[in-house]
Each structure stands twice: as C-alpha cells, then as structure tokens.
Image 1 (cartoon, rainbow, N blue to C red):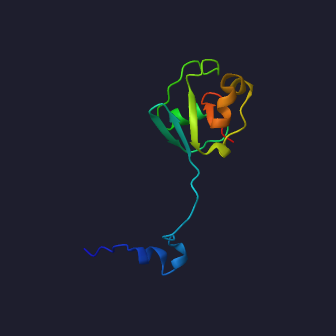
Image 2 (image 1 turned 90 degrees about the vertical axis):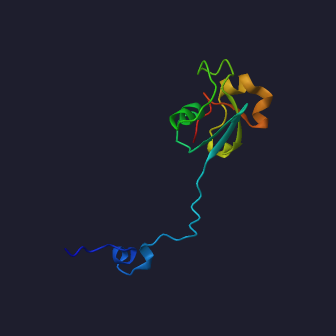
Image 3 (image 1 turned 60 degrees about the vertical axis):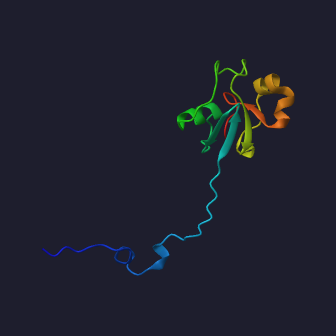
Length: 112
C-alpha cells in the first residue's frame, strides 16, 4: 500500500506567503490585576466587568456583593488601565483617592 504523506511544503504549494512569520509582532493586549496575593492576567472582553472577565477566564478574585458597596473586590490594575472605561459613581465614591493610584472595583470597572 502506497501512502502519500503530507509535508509543510506540499501544503503550501511552494508559496511562502502562507507561512506565518517567525517574528510576528501582533500586540496581545492583556490586563494584569493584583489583589492581595492573587494575580490575574486576562484577555479583555468588551463590556464585561473586570470581575466577570476574570472569573470567566478561570482565575480567582475575592468578591462579595457585586454592587460596588463592600469594596471586597478592589484590585490594583498593574497594566491595561487604558482598556477600561472611566470609573463610575460607585467606584468614585468607594475608592476616592485610590483611583489615582490605579485601584478599581472589579465588579464595577468595565472593559472598553
């Protein structure tokens, strides 16, 4: 039985433009959060809260009320703050001076 094996060359028919570049610099925007000893890295999902996106991506954050009143879900945004909408009134009231230091309520901060 004569079996034909496929090689990369046979799949691209000699056309190099189908091969991915080894030095592809596609920026992967990530949001990095810190909460006490917990660290989360998440892929931004538009219109989701930081809390929902983090939990949906299988990572842990401490939280309780989900209403923006208890402050238990407060996180420090290490990178990716520019990917978030501006703080809403609940965040402004609860965090006040901490907003300028990069802290957000994960249950209230929404991704652009």
